[in-house]
Image (cartoon, rainbow, N blue to C red; front, side):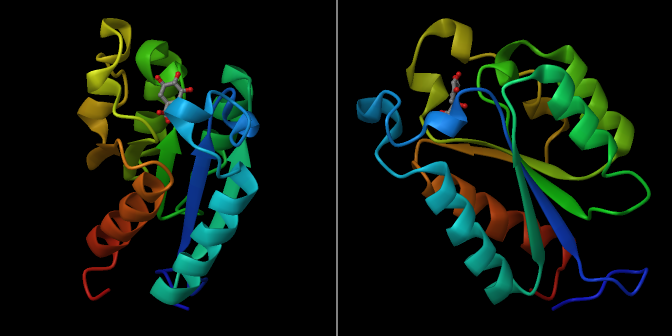
Length: 156
Ligand code: DQA
């Protein structure tokens, strides 16, 4: 496990927004049949392979997502994977929280939001992200994690 500047393992947070708890049963034609639990388990495995610790959180509430982001302060978390669900398109408050804590993050989406309704083409989070990835189903998270770790641990 890689150690950060404080000697603790490098910790990556994965944030899942509203309705992502229903993955597996929710609109399977759009989001597939893999559950959130399965995605989280795979992220932990990939994290172990890359030498980083993964912590995951899902909430349907904007305030709870912001509260979670605020716990990343003080270099507790080295980077984040963020799928804010529909809040990605609307939430200036989540964008402000991400920028306030200064934690580098990758925006991810299971679906290709640019190929969907125009309301989904706008992202409040993309301009401040390291990068954005979508359209690959669960693989969007895994690719995002690998890209994030390559950026924050250049030797990875
Ligand atoms: C999503 C895309 C959003 O537009 C949608 O509201 C979601 C899921 C995705 O992962 O593809 O809830 O973030």
